[in-house]
Each structure stands twice: as C-alpha cells, then as structure tokens.
Length: 396
Image (cartoon, rainbow, N blue to C red; front, side, top):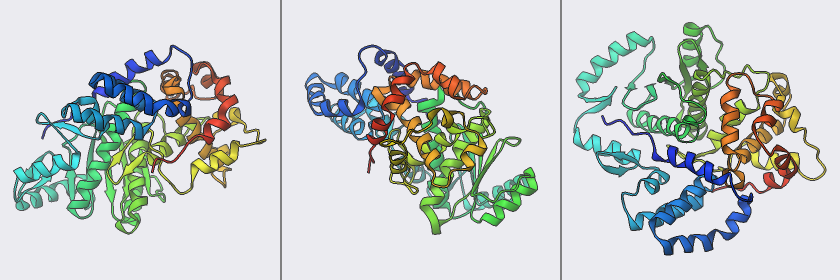
C-alpha cells in the first residue's frame, strides 16, 4: 500500500503565520465582509492568487471560503496540491483521490480479497491471520489495519464499518498532523487503536490488560500506547465522535498530556475542537463548527455575554476540581471557544504564539501566566472575547 505524504499545507501554513503577523489586525468577521470582492479579484489574477486566498482562509478557520477557493482553483488545475488537500483528497499513485475513492480503487485491483494489515488477502488467508492476531492481542477482533502512517487499528464488527472507521481514524491523525504536527508535536510511535462493539467487552479487556477501570466509551493507556473505544451502529454519530476523541486522547497522551495537569482547559479544548471539526462520517475539517449536543457555541456565548464577568484567568488555571464543578458545561464551552478563537481569529494572528504555548503546555507550562507570556496581545483578546465568541457561527 502506498503511504501518504506529509501535506504541503503544513509548510504553507507555517509560511502564512509569518506573513500574517505583520500589518493591522482584522477580525475574521470583517475579513468575511470583504471576501467576495477579494475572491473575485483573486480569480482575475489566476491560480496563484486563488491558492493564496485559500491558504489565508484555512489559517483563519474559514472552512466554507477555503473550499470555495479550492473549487475554483481545481477548475484551472485539476492536480493543484493546495486545492486538493483543502478538498480532503490524498495523493495516490500520482492521482488525487478521496480516501474512499482510494480504497475503492485498491479493492477493485484486488477482487475477492480484503485488506488485512497492509495487504489484501483471500478469505482463507484472513481467517488464519485473524486467529494469530487474536491470540497475540488477547481479544476477538475481526479486522486489523496497519497500512496508514501514525496508527494501527483493531476492529470488532462488519468489514465495511471497519474500513469506514479506519478512514475516520486516518482523517483524525492527518488533521492533527496538518494543524499541530509541525508546531506542537507528533508522536514518534504509532498509536494503537482498539475498537470494540460492546462497552462490557471493552471495559473487561482494559481492566484485565491495564488495570484501569473503563466505564467511559473511550480510554487511553500510556503504558501500552493504546486507545480503546466502543463503536456501536445503534448510536453511530456518538460512536464516531468517541472514535475521534479516542485518537486525540491517544495523541495527547503519547505527547505527555494525560489530563493530570494543574491546568486542564487546553486538554478539554483539544477533545471538543476535534469532535466539533468532524464535518462528515469519515472526515475532519479545521475551522468547521458542527451543531453539537451540548451546544457549546451557544453556551459559550451566554457565559461571556453582557455583564457576565467571566474569569478567564480562573479558566486557564483550572484543574480537575474546577472542571468537575461544571454542571452546565460552561467552562468546557468557553475552553473550546477560547481555543478556537486564539487559533483562528484575526486571520491566525496569534496562531504561532498559541502553538508555542501548547508545545510548552505538554511540559507543564500551561496556566494563565504561561498563556499570557506566550500569547502576545492577550489583553486585546480578553477585552474582545464576548464579541469574538458571539461571532462564532455554525458551518452547517
């Protein structure tokens, strides 16, 4: 199987941060007002200008506008790397395909065979390989994949579901890599993801192997570098969110962040950010804000609106006790909103500083003092927080 190359957007976004840091800050809302005219101007200048505007939209978290630019660029050049990556395609054998198209291509080239590990095998071969793998890992998985970089996956359930979840795990790992991999960090080892079809089976296995009590739908074990999660078709939307969360918990854990810091806001923010950025059953789109229950966007707006003097310092320094006392999810909601705003607002003006803070946070420097020292211009963000939170809008 062909391994997927590192996205060119990683380099392009890094270059964009340097360029954005100069010049007067412009709210994303104001940028959106002028976007139609700027888009028409870019179309008149050609592909390079369209790609530049697309990258500006990506850095700003403007999902719809980035896709609009990408669609226009593809009219001019079907193999344009920037436009294809923004559109969710990967380069396979010199062709840009969606992951589902890629898998269909390989399946068609291997009639009568199924993917096991990194190879397509016959049913008889798979049965023999399955017996050996079950004996090795200690539970009754049905599928095993090791063909993509960054993770291996064991799955209990129908093969089509296994392939779909594999693409979702792939998208989540790639989503981390493209936005945070270069600037924040990327695990050196592959994350092992175990997907069960029943909570009881997962809980029993995790307790036996790791000694952890696992009553939640997903858990990460730092000793085995493994994430465990339940996928149930009867509650598919929630299950897919839990798969995404399991992968992000795993990446965070492998980078040294296991939710045991004196400050936990960024831990929760990472989990919700990726859940809410899931724009389809098998895909992640940075900047996408999905309607989600609980409705964190609306909760955040209500929490910081009007005369509500929200304690940002308390939020950024809050530990487990602080977030345990959160019956309305307001603290988690504002954590997500602050994370999103600092990462994307003012066309990514604070992104480089913020990612430097996140990298340091994995080494324990994660409270309000560390945040204010790393993110230059925090006073501006604090002053405008209510308006910036209110400006967050759903993408669908």
